[in-house]
Length: 615
Image 1 (cartoon, helix red, strand yellow):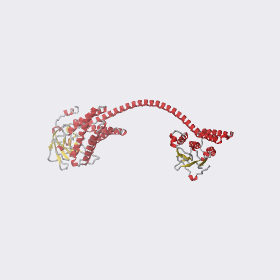
Image 2 (cartoon, one colour):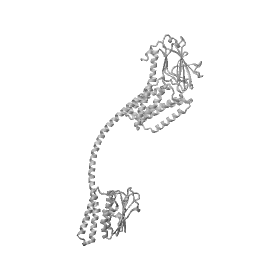
Image 3 (cartoon, one colour):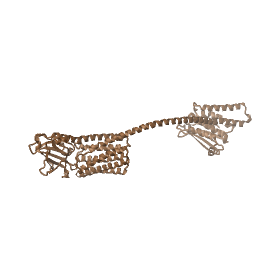
Image 4 (cartoon, helix red, strand yellow):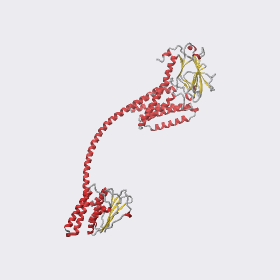
């Protein structure tokens, strides 16, 4: 109403008495002599001259009675694409580029105060030369002449609608595009954020068409029109993708068809020659807009079927946007009398709605995090109590297991060492009969005492490794050789001068117990006449200790399955405990026990091993 008050106060109701237009066919920037046709503004000349690309002159005859003794102002809402303005024969204004690349004044409101020196007492006319392309809807938008106060307010209103509002829209779109691009980069799984960011970038590219004054960075108007239409097509496609992803709609075939159609349309836009550009720019853009409107309609049904809060909010926003788009499409097709687009106003609703949705989701996430923290604290406390009880049980089991292992080790040591000593003593008594004197009995008791002391010493962690294999086997050989002689059992000891590999104290003790048990079994069960103990290195590192006898032999598998042979199980357990392998091969006349230790070590060549032969 405030804007309309100056119009009601104007003294002259009709400032323009006639308007005519004529084509400039020669392209010489001269006013046509003939071919003038009456027009009304706003005007798009392709309705009269469909294929005309170039310049058209507009002549507006002023009411001389309205020009007497008062200032006169002129405003133009915009002209497509570039132009120049004369008041009678005086040039008042012109665009910077009237040839390719053409200036873009189509959405730039302009205001002039007509100089009194240019006005005549009668026969005043305004001459407007407009240069444009047939595919860019060339012509003149609203033109007003009147008192400066009224025309200035009208110009301010046009500037707000056509420049300021669109500039705010562009800034908001760029901010939203940047913000949601960051959201998507930080949370790739939510593809709706990525599609909304991409649609915001496309909308910013499309809306920039209303604000630029030159076709830069393009060199022709056609390329700029291609870019603008491509941005609109991409905006419709990316916005549809955003709607589908946001509503969690799974439409794989529709998505593939949309991608293919978008790619084909973009290719068509950029390869079509300028001569045939008008239908290529108009119809695909209109079709994609209608498809986007159809998508907005289907989302209303989706929101009805899935009434989540974010679906309802977006459906309401799309419903408003749908109504405004329908208004603009009908105005573009000439079905309603409206010359002002409403989309720049409503396009601000979607970013605001997205902010609300993100804020709602953020608050929901915070609530879920708070509940999660409470549940996590309770779960941690419960798990801590269970873990404490479990650890206590495990500790008790481990202590019991340790005690059992210690008992088992002591039992094996007693069996392998003290048992072999007892066996030797029994064999000695059986051989000597009643001929044993007091000193021999005392010697056997001292030997048993020494074996028991050796068991205790070897169980200590401070046991050291013998310097050479000969030193290692010297006590054991001393104890058994005397018994072998009495039993007329020939023994050979083939030992290297140095260890084939590095041994630790537990490994040396395990080999000692293995050898004691093997020799004891030979005495007890084999009925052998000769035996051989040999040690050698392995090619890949490590060593092997082999005990061979020519006794009666036995069935290895049957003995193990029957559960007999405590000594055999003990030997297997000892060798396995130090990471080795025990191989037993037996047949009548030959039994071989091989203890293998695989470990990286420097092996002495067998040619350098000095073997001691003891019969």
